[in-house]
Length: 421
Image (cartoon, rainbow, N blue to C red):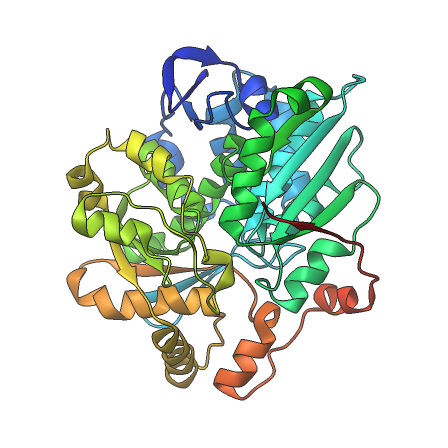
């Protein structure tokens, strides 16, 4: 499998180049030359397959030409000692819980596989890799966890000052060793721009081997397709098309869902649920992409005003907004609607949902009548305890805190501060 830049389809890159570079030098994004297809027999057998079995098969379709099958299986088995279970609220509303990894967020799925793939590519060499990653909340902690103490790889995380929750900040800043956290006086978009500028800086590129661990890296993006297959496996008995409701910020999660659909997973539709940072719902409505400065919300991991993966989505739909609309609808959810959704979900079903999942919950309740023959699958991207202040204010209860998150509260913060220019 070869990869190309969204800004230059003529030049081909190997998987190793795409993964270790992270970004092409032209500031595009790596895309696969083709989307591999899964076998009908695999889809028929999904119901009886575990996450590890599913991920091994799907990863093999993507990376099997470059990485031995036994190595892929070993990577997957090591990356996923947890599952991504579906909780059914009623016969039409289902929640895909993606917070059962070590940092209680969906990004563990992509980051843990990517760390193992990168480590395999630099094995046995003297090459030192420096990973730069911008985070709006959960990406950085997942990357830090995935790469902690990995030989020959250093990680530098940039996060916006005052725009992540306290538990998120502790998960970013309490590692040490090969993990450094930089607190940036700016927004997530500022952090992301600084990372991209670093990749394009000729002096840095000659002194450091830089790579990225955001969803701009194809190795972080592809594994996120695994849990779409795992969700379908758990809901296969419904015998209904699935409508995936995706709380969206940088749109890597939704792009991975499109990959899964193009591979052959029978997905009915996608609902791109955003907070006030509604650049892509606006694009779907008006047909023009207008990035803008992000605004802060209680669903802070989605506070992205210039989503990088839009360009991958555009490439997948041949720059046709009409074609994209056939698969994806966009819903903007306000702060008030988010809190009301948290309340409604708890009162109606007794389920505590975090602010990001609540954005998806509201989007599904608002549009489910437009999908009468489909079952809605809401991606619950983070554990509610990571946003305990919002949960307490809204539901007047303290969400149960998993032990691995509680332990972080006693760690010493290790961080640096940089002003954005």
